[in-house]
Amino acid sequence: MKFSSRLNWNLTPNPLTQLLDAKRAQGIPILDLTESNPTRCGFHYDDAAILSAISSSKSLTYDPSPRGLLKAREAITNYYLLKNKTVDPNSIFLTASTSEAYSFLFKLLGDAGDGILVPQPSYPLFEFLAGLESLRTIHYPLRYDSDPRGLGDLAGLWTINFEVLRESISERTKAIVIVNPNNPTGSYLKKDELAKLNELCHERKIALIVDEVFSDYANGEDANRIETVVSNDGALTFALSGLSKVVALPQMKLGWIQVSGETKAVEEAMSRLELIADTYLSVATPVQHATPKLLAMRESIQKEIRERVEMNGKVLEEQKLNVLKREGGWYAVIEIEQDDERLAYELLEGENVLAHPGYFYDFRGRDVMVVSLITKVDVFEEGIAKLTKNLQGL
Ligand SMILES: Cc1ncc(COP(=O)(O)O)c(C=O)c1O
Image (cartoon, rainbow, N blue to C red; front, side):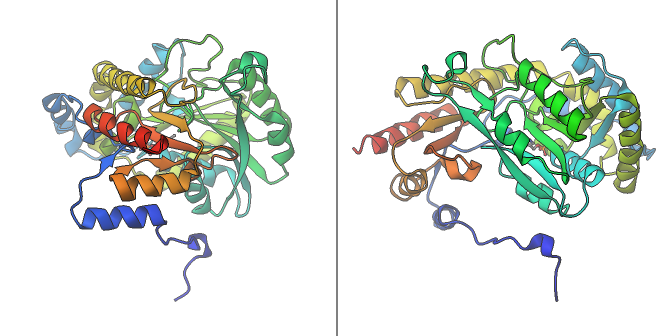
């Protein structure tokens, strides 16, 4: 049988994953510093309220709509209204996840072989999301200035390398993806960067896809930061988010796309997106009815997550690890002098501690370890102490 060449990836697990599987099979307890599933991190969810929200009797009737139920989309417009952004509910499309939102947009924008620009370092799923739509990813670098004399005001900030980004655009480039804030660097898009992106996308007729799933988790204030691009009118823009991070309920499977830009382009994009969404109608009815109530729960769970992130951040400070500046999100990037792949393997092999090596996220030119700051604090403290001991060669 000959299967689609879209799936020609080498799917052999890497040595770290093989070692992890072997340890787990032997029942060895692992100090997992990469836990990013919030439902496994010991947070206090209001179980009764969540269960009541998804058990509305209205869910017994099937009344599908390609964009999703209006009352769910209106709840999302209220969420943006509190960020001082007025959004038309008709510009919102519900999806089963942010990942599905990407797949809809890649179908909308690209033909087989077309290119999507994605940040580097970033989230490792893009190769798969684009490849499954027969598109290519092209990486544009984000640069971090750790030398205060290097980029002046930009010291300790990740910025888009616009020179390389510009040179990477060809006739076949269909979109620029921005992760705001980025996973795992935690870096936010800045006002001047959005202005340059608008100009570039408008001039080269390409779309802007901005993944804002972590945008509610800022670390401190910065007036130059873009919290959300919803209602950005400088380019055809798709803002993505969802319940998986906003209310820490990834199992609910609800994401969304908000479309903005020049009226004609928005209308054309929305009529095509409607066809794509109508083909699948993939969002379950119970979660759509529950969305207003679930979104209303975000304050308490986000507060708890922020406190956890802060507590674990302090653990890193106490150990005097070289942590890159973190503007937001759930991850910390620790710069190391050793080879990251080797260190990750040795930590797991010798100490039963799991941390991700930077190469998983395509960090270039610096060795780093990536850890999740929503890990339970006792696990985090013990794992980080072992990591620190290992870094000091003790
Ligand atoms: C940047 C980013 N976008 C999207 C997702 C996936 O979100 P969803 O569960 O809505 O597919 C993740 C998951 O960790 C992520 O890190």
